Image (spheres, one colour):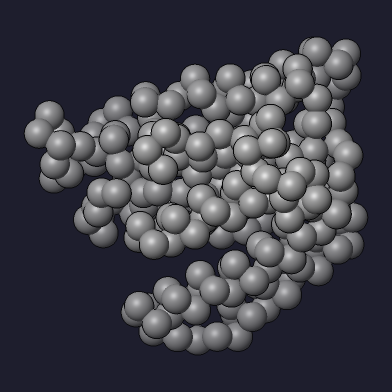
Length: 224
């Protein structure tokens, strides 16, 4: 996993904040629209924002740890609610294939795909963007490459196209995905290993299968 300089960092916000350093490794979750009651989702987001706002901390490693742990706490609340729904639009071979093929399309181009699982109503992906900032010697470039494709743009490529294709397949119209995705910067290999296990265990935890290998919509890179 490459480490890039602070000048490469970028930040964007929809309903949740997103920190996306250039060349980072990211754990991303996106879900179907209307999979959570709006009142429940708004309360979780409001509680998260309140805790962050009330916590005035200097921007150091301790503050970063606090922000990550707080984000994880509220993410797990949402993910646990999603896992309670064992049936959904994505639990369909043809629909899951549309999503997996779109994710695979940008593998080795914009990122190294490490793992994903397609659940009935949401998708988890872990991918590493460092390949975009490495030079011909495998070293991190001194400047951000002009051709770099940021995380938020990649997510639009994945979510926008799959929404169009799935809607066409099902002869439906309107938004397919919830507006905001949830992304977490992965800071080291230990954390990455933990997230890989989290992704693989998601169908097991949701009681869809007994072993992760039994779930047909899960991918794991061979060297992991």
